Length: 325
Image (tube, rainbow, N blue to C red):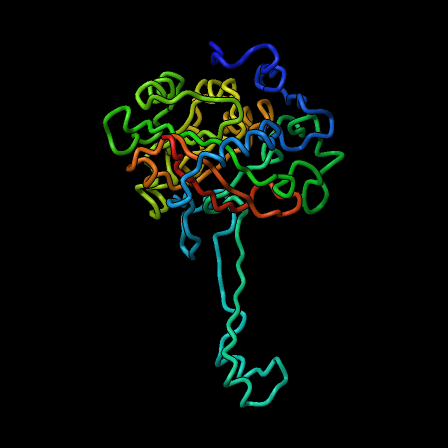
C-alpha cells in the first residue's frame, strides 16, 4: 500500500503501523513507557498551528446525549445506561438528610442524581488497553503484570491527553451518492481515497480522521443502529494508520464492518488499530451536521473522562471550522 507523500523514512519511524506484524502487539516508537501511542504525534507546535486557524464563531458538537434506553452493547451482556435521582426536593423534606428544620428544606430545593453505565456507551473513546493479542496490549504490556482485580494499571483512559488537532471528515455515503451505507458495508482504501479526491482534502501527520457511514441516521433505534453496522475493513484501517493518524473515529458503535470478514477474528480492526498500530478510536460520533455543511477540514478538540485504567470513557468532541477553509 502506497504511503502518503509526506511520509518519509524519518516519519515512518514515528508511526507504529510501519513496523507492525499481523496478530502481534507492536512496541511503541515512543519508548517502553509509552501508553498513548499515536497521540504522541500531537505536540505543542501542531496544536498551535491548528488553533491559530479556527473560526470561533461556530462550533459543531459531535456527541450524542446519554439517556435511559439509549442504544448499547446489551447483546454482549454489558449494562445499559441507567440514571436515577438520589435527592429530590420533596424527598429531602421527608428524609431531612441535611438535619435542618422544615423551613430550610422547603427553601432549599435539592436535586441530585447518579448514573451507571458501560464505559463504551454513547460518544466515547477506546483506549489502547481495550483489545490486544494473547493477553498483551500495545507496547507489550501484559495482563499478567498490569491487570488487577479492578482495572489495567496502564494505557487506560486516564492517560489520554486532551486532543487538539487537525480533523478531517471522510463522507463515504456522499461519495457513493446515498444517504447511508448499507448494512455491513465494508469501507476500504478505494472508498477513503475517493473521499479525499472528491473533497479536495489531503491527509497530514497527526490528523484526527473521522469516517461517516450515515448510520447515525438510525439513532436511537437499538437494532437499526447497532446490528450489522457498516464500517472500516482491515485494509481500510491499514490505509488510515499508514497515513499517520493520531486518532480514528466514526459514527457507528463498532468502528469496523460487522460482522467481521476475517473468520479467525471477530473484531479484527479493533485488534489491529489498538494493538498493532497504537491508534485509539472514537465511536458513536454524530457527524451529520458536519457532513451537511461539507466541513471536511476543521480543528478537533476533545477530552475524555479520566477514568483510571478504563478501557473506554465518554468524550465530548467539538469541531471548529477553519478561517481558510
